[in-house]
Length: 596
Image 1 (cartoon, rainbow, N blue to C red):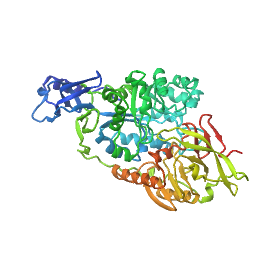
Image 2: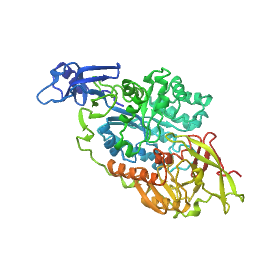
Image 3: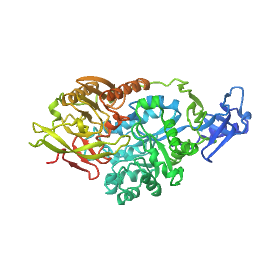
């Protein structure tokens, strides 16, 4: 967070506004989207000095000197740079630099990053890696310290863990703005020492505490979670979730990522129930590279919010001023006003929100979707590679699920819910052969396995999942497996599951698809098994080929790789699989894969 402008910069702004000093940049004759007042003001000029707005008003000709760059807006809208209030950069499969390369042409000039994915693999040094790279970017990126590594203590095995003492230390680092999403909601409700200590440390430093309450129970546990000290939440999926969070004093984060589409249902709290739109923030949470490159980032979310019934002004406020105020940054960003960073978008239509020019700190970074300046690629240190550790190659028998001698058995099955993070707890009667429970293609039941890839323990846990629609002899594997990021495999053939897992281990991590023993497509993610060191365009193309391979296997889900990545996330109801077993999330307890 800023400690205030240096006196010489403040004097320069005042002198420019008075006409005593020429501006570095003047934008002429735009329509000012004044999110702070809810107005659109025609015939507006904007003058910039030292990367800050010095003057915004009807006529800035007095700010123009011989060396001033003048951009004619020709009536286009002047919109504050867009901000993502909650994003896991690792989910894009890109490094921070390549994430910036992908999102800036779409109008993103700020984001709040929660690096809990890489923290689950490398601990605090992974957080430091992301923080240091964020500080070198031409846009403003703040980092939240992951609060729950692991996310479900005792139910999973991550590659690293963060203690309350480590979290408290990291909260003091420059560039850290808050405590990352508090996923251990059961721990908050139970007043666990770890959660009390971490939230208390953030509060003492005046930092924001981000929430994560995925339960549908809005009774006492929800009220207790709110009382625990969280400031926002992005896990709601229903109208009543949004209303309850606002009434309890939280900011509602409406999520629209590659796989989670939670805006339309919850935005009705504004459009139908009449709640104050200033209590809502638009976020992406998780978006993969292909979505960012091909469809957009926050511009895409703003368009979707408008299509869901919000006014353009309200939608833009939710991606600019609202998150800026929530994180205490409105003296820096989120609105076009004197003293703020000159993060300005030129847009032809607010409803269409197709960004024609992106200016950050007074520098034109992109125009018509193309970078105007060079963005330097940065190599990730070698110590963040080589993160997939298996004691031996896997074989088909590793995915055997023992059952009794009856011809069928009743299994507890994870049910995928398309475009949402929660799963359903299904019960399915499955055939038994040679004392092993089998897949059932007619019921769309495949096998899912989680393999410890951090500690070479050899642990393999296998259960059943429904919803992917895979045909025979198909398997997919991923080391992007929230939040412990063990090796996750789903398939309809055990030999193909072994092939997929072994191929991915040899690649050093990533995502791939196998059909009939042959690898159809791979996106290699050697940085912690989470991110690529290649540029955004190449990663997006590889990710697109993986999605095409999913479809070749019969899967019609919108973003199946995102759905796959959450099958091990033991903090979102109802049923999940970790390297330690099948988890009833609501009770925080293990359950049998097949009923005895």
